[in-house]
Amino acid sequence: MRQSKLFTKTSHSVPKDEESKNAQLLIRAGYIQKELAGVYSILPLGFRVLKKIEGIIRKEMESLDGQEILMPALQPKTNWEQTNRWETYDTLFRFESFYTKSEYALGPTHEEIVTPLLKRFIASYKDLPRAVFQIQTKFRDEKRAKAGLLRGREFIMKDLYSFHANEDDLAAYYEKVRSSYERIYAAVGIGNRTYFTFASGGTFSKYSHEFQTLTEAGEDTIFICETCKIAINEEIVKEQPECPQCNTTKLKEEKAIEVGNIFQLKTRFSECFDLQYTDEKGAKKLVVMGCYGIGLTRLLAAVVEALGDEQGLVWPRSISPFQIHIVGLQGGDEKAQEVYDKLQSQGLDVLYDDRRGESSGAKLKDADLLGIPLRLVISERTLKENAAEWKTRGQKESALVPLDKIIEKVIEMQG
Ligand code: ATP
Ligand code: MG
Image (cartoon, rainbow, N blue to C red; front, side, top):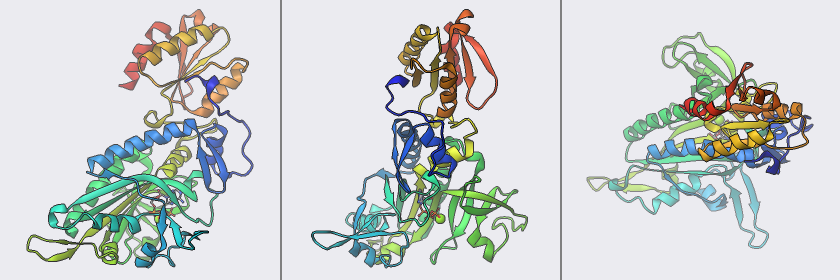
């Protein structure tokens, strides 16, 4: 893509109404725009990152036999009354229709829809297990929405729901989801700072589990066991200040953000909607459920919080909006165009800074702000060596690479 055609622009001043690093950097780089507190538009560069994250998550969900669906954000009050959550779900957006006076919720989660939905199809043990997921917009009336995409009032979540004949089957599936989640966090570049965290399980299970990513901006406090490489959250530490795996009380306190949550619902919702199946012996039993969430927009922001630096965004290759950023500087434009065409014809995702009238300094500063992992500068100076300057975002060193070796080197880099 040619940068001159991009409708967004970078800005080097910090937006006054944003406190968080993720919102400041993403807005300055033109990835997102704030519409109101906790509500953002996702712009072309941000959208490309989101789609890559989505792709990574979708692949894992399919490997868990999850079937993708799309449920409505607009939900009837009656379903929420049936689960006793109309009054008690503290961040539920509730409103009345102007015409019919019926009341609705804007979905903060989808147990109230997915349980009656699956009830239409699950009748016998032969219909189990089943898993469905969606990647969809959620609404929550959050008290504080000052953390940019980390805590939105409207945000994008992947929610997976699983349906089982018994608790053992749920437990086995739950472990598979855990592994998938770990692969997702590794793939987006924050695996080394994301901890499987023991959290309270509500009334039905001893524990649920969160995935917590260490970052200064995190609103949660977790306690890490360095031996087991797991953590416990604040709720758990109050009751049992020790590692649930090795029982050590040597725990390290850290700030973190919850990037995912997995929960054994068991029969909490199947009871409310009377979701039953007939087993092999003809007996009626309640279906056992699990739910598993990942906030995509929060995950994107967590990567920015974790990896972004003074100069701007820093994307891992797996989710970068483009693989390569070609920057044509004075006297290098014609060759830069040639290299751009060549890389494009190889099927590579390239952003080409072809803007005229921007100073070299401004272009290089923008390249740092945008955060694409590989920058190739082509200028009169590099062309004297018949080369481009090759630089990886986040590293100080750069090197000259002969123009006729670039494709080879890019392919080698992509492994
Ligand atoms: P938190 O404790 O941070 O408020 P939660 O426990 O309410 O989150 P869940 O209901 O488990 O969150 O939602 C599943 C996932 O959705 C979370 O792990 C998180 O990644 C994401 N998420 C939750 N609330 C928000 C929000 N307001 N903005 C962005 N993402 C969110
Ligand atoms: Mg939570």
